[in-house]
Length: 187
Image 1 (tube, rainbow, N blue to C red):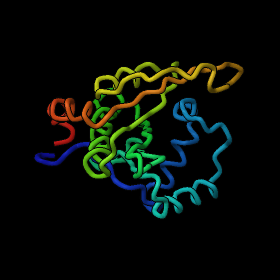
Image 2 (tube, helix red, strand yellow; image 1 turned 90 degrees about the horizontal axis):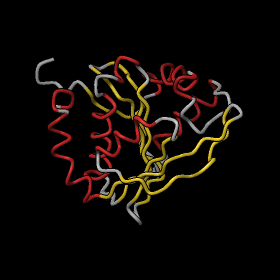
Image 3 (cartoon, one colour; image 1 turned 90 degrees about the vertical axis):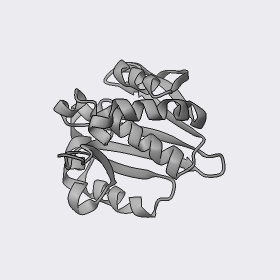
Image 4 (cartoon, rainbow, N blue to C red; image 1 turned 120 degrees about the horizontal axis):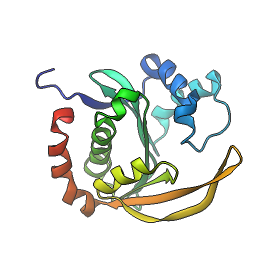
């Protein structure tokens, strides 16, 4: 794919993405790191997808690797008054997890948040039992703000959740370097 970015993010489209997103969201490998514990049913899944274009408080995208869906990334709780939002993502394809796809998608969504939406702060929450994303977010300039102790109850265990954020000036100091490191994926 000469000259073309290997990793892109595109808005979720019902026709193209509904089925794969449904399978991913039902997968225990993905859902174990999500707050939602209720079983996901097709009708509510489709209703959620159909609500996205009208919802001005969020931007939900599919991560594409060479044009193939590889995961999702989203900005939620978009607050234009205070210029802040929350960020979340998952890389669903196992092979994509070791190729830097998550980091490339994170660069793209942070560019969306800071450059396009003019946010001042982007926050995220990560299960403490999943340390790899914490380290990746820190490489992007995120700082740990604190830990929500025993925040999620799952399968008989309490899980801590790490709260992180990055400010626009912190991202600005990392953006060019991260884009350069990931240029093989994002052009």
